[in-house]
Amino acid sequence: MYRFSRSIYRELAPDILEDKPGHWGPSNHERVLRACEAAVYRLATDWHYFAKPTKTLFNDIRIYFPMCSQERVYVVVDRYMSFAKEYFSSLPMTGYDVEGNRIECRATTRRGTRCQRTPLPQNGYCPSHQHLAEPEEMPLAA
Ligand SMILES: [Zn+2]
Image (cartoon, rainbow, N blue to C red):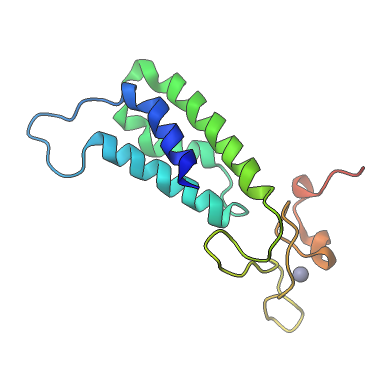
């Protein structure tokens, strides 16, 4: 899954600002790469709850780019994050996420416990809890 973050980083790397003289700690390049990895990781493991991946990653890394590159950075981030989200949400339903954790329906049962059924990929609710999904997340009627 890190091929997404590496691709984003590779496209953005030429525009990353030079580290300030006397700088210590991780370089700007490393910070951008880490931020991309974190965003892609979150998208892969928790995309139901990751509402604005493009904005989140862009806000994390924009300070490492000059003013004149901001628009390009946003476009690149948006292209890859949209693609990654589409990819992760289209993975076959195994009941497990990329980390091997069991995926469960987002609903709580009447007894107050988590619903244990396997959710549908488009909204994270199992077939019997589809009515709880946000309207904009409802699968389009065929
Ligand atoms: Zn359910």
